[in-house]
Length: 351
Image (cartoon, rainbow, N blue to C red; front, side, top):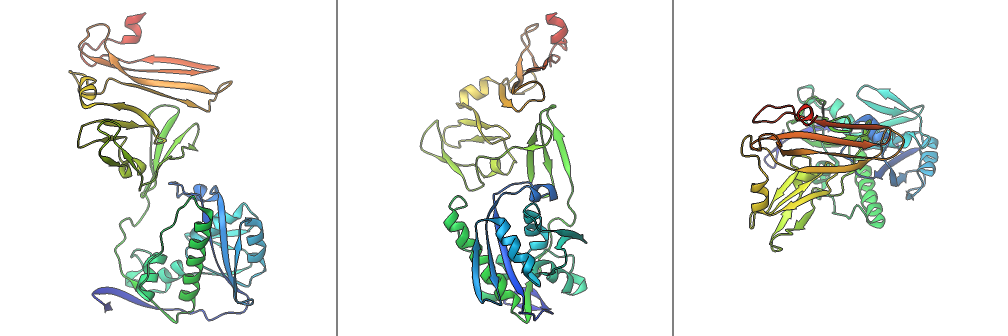
């Protein structure tokens, strides 16, 4: 069906229950890791529930108290609760079970509106994109989610209340108007790489998660909306979106050419002028002559420090070679590669 120029599905809502029904939502810290493990490890910030028997909204700052309420309910209603919220609450005492591609609470009925739509919509469109809560809000009520500061607990709670309010309103609709949109990724595809034994990244088909020290997540210090004033010309504001998304490790000022290089944790490693940057490129292979390092948690006796980079070949002076120094107590290792010009093994050449 086409409505206002957009193709939609009309999906009948089969649920009419009110007695013992609780509509809920939780908010957590942000993470680029959307794997099952990543969701299980999220930190609870707040939760909101609407209890039909009491006809009131309840706010929770302690996840265990929210779980106690949910356990007493006959039916739980959520929007992607079976794909996210139940996993977050598992470590706080909620017992869940695997159901198809998601999770359901044990011995409690559950309606996840998002997944319900995917199952009840016409068969020809079941492979289409799952609708977001905001898409459904706009389709039904012409509103979008209000913006909020993810570091302000008061604003987070207000945002959570808004999500529960509109999830409740959608639950009370007899028919859902669902936008038909193509999925960009039909099946998640996992990839990973390691620069060395200490750090790497995992791509789940939608996001990069940078890891180090046996899979410990590296927390990003910037968001996709972050900007910074160019430290070179101090006139141009630079977007950090691609750095936050893991697509680039460098930001170049279009006005003065200053290059800011970031670590996998999105911390600034170096700031170079255009002239300094160009002078640090190997004339033979075009790769950067640079060095960087960071303190890591260590798998030896204590915290360690890992440095790596490329340097000018000491043998011919015309090429460069890779090297790394791992100063972890109990696991010290030093490695030097071959020159890109004369092909000498620098480690052996020095000896």
